[in-house]
Length: 195
Image (cartoon, rainbow, N blue to C red; front, side, top):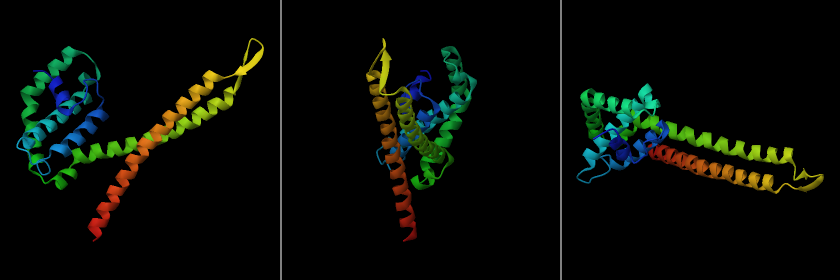
């Protein structure tokens, strides 16, 4: 066995970045928390998910994780197995005994949730920037370009600007729907606590 099984546990590729690791952890931890998931293997799956998260965030936080050198990752894995795996499993077992609401308030879950929310705002602003940049590009290029002394329609530039604008709109729509869902969830929580 090697470190790649931790990526499989979280359902991500081996070249996933730290944000993908944290998002996958949050999704899987919520789905498998024993307080929510009453299936017989949920407790053990939840512990495995936590162990994978701790291992991968440590790996990516070290200089070994930033290099794609397979030998150093294997060495890191051997060291992990020797000393850190048991500690990670004990922390995960503790989290598994928590009520889900208490787990949601834990630093591991809150950090990944906050990063996900910040990413949504970043994508929203990126989408707006892309649309503005596409419009500015079309404005500076113009609808017509000179070709061998005559003006022709700038078809390539127009098509590129339209595609870029659609990408910006897609970023805006996806991020806004996530932001809106998060706000509705917070509002519902506050309404529930107020009553």
